[in-house]
Image (tube, rainbow, N blue to C red; front, side, top):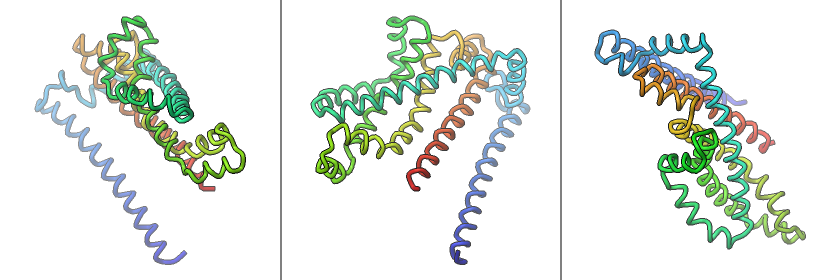
Amino acid sequence: MSDRQLAFIRQAARQKRIILGLRLLIFVLFIALWEISTKLEWIDSFIFSSPSRILFCFLEMAESHTIFYHVGVTLGETFFSFFLVIVIGILLAVLLWWNETVARVLEPYLVVLNSLPKTALAPVFIVWLGNNMKTIIVAAVSVAVFSTTITLYNTFQEMDPGKIKMIRTLGGQKKDILCKLILPGNVPAIISAMKVDIGLTLVGVIIGEFVAAKAGLGYLIIYGSQVFKLDYVLLSIVILCLISTGLYLLISLLEKLCLKHYSV
């Protein structure tokens, strides 16, 4: 390895450390400013809470295991909804790719459903499905499944026509094109869609829990705001930030493993 390459690697590593340090500095300054502002009464700690109050609230709820129960409910609903979004999205995208007539008929409806505010549908889901977990799951799936279907369908359509022609020349059928080219060739695109879907699904679950839950972080947010225990609200928001970051990093790790496999 040449000196120029080593210098480039060192510079890249240094730049990475600087970025990480700046991120941590911004976070620490934000937390410190928030805590100091409440101690000096620049802001009302009853309304805005504070890092120390949120920590004490977490420890109190952790002692009774209440917070872990709510987190577990939200995570369970998120994972199940995420699984449904990926399966349904892939199946619908395959259907649209397989039958051009169906694609032309359904595409405008998918666009409309994707652009429709899902919060407006939540009360309707309650009337249709009742005040239960089914409403939460349907609300979460509806947030992400249409965008996933459209994105994957467009990606399937952009597959190299030369490769498709080569499979047809060798006697392959449409199912061979799907199983040996379209799906394997779009695994990175599917994982990229998963990175977006995991966040959207979590948002959908929280929307559902706002209106149709008896447990979960969304329920805790609504309950805390109703009884003016805003520590519950902000604690739930902090935990949601941590959950969304962790889930995103998990999918990113899966993406790196996938790209490493494809590069071999």
